[in-house]
Image (cartoon, rainbow, N blue to C red; front, top):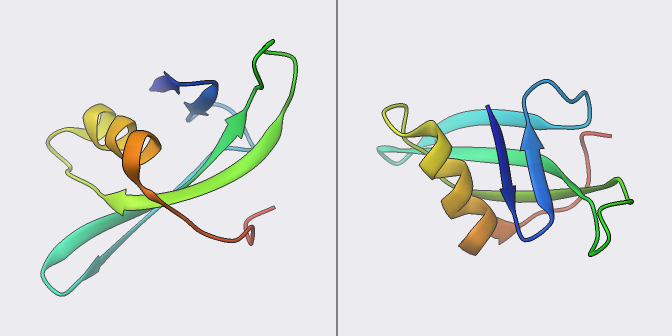
Amino acid sequence: MKVNVNNLVFDERDSLCKCILTASQGRLYAFVQVVDTGPKGDLRIPKQYWGLYSYDQPRQSIIGILESGGKWPSVLV
């Protein structure tokens, strides 16, 4: 799966991209590391976001996280 939202790219085939799923308090969350390609598409800056995740809608979950998820510090480099 590959998702691109405002120059933030999640591509499960890219070694910089990660997705860690965890359940807490009855909900499922994803912590994702994506690549910020910049406005010209020529950069590769890892960025981290988290938010709600659904096994039934993985693509839409990642899109939602990139559009309005929380940020978290870099620890997966």
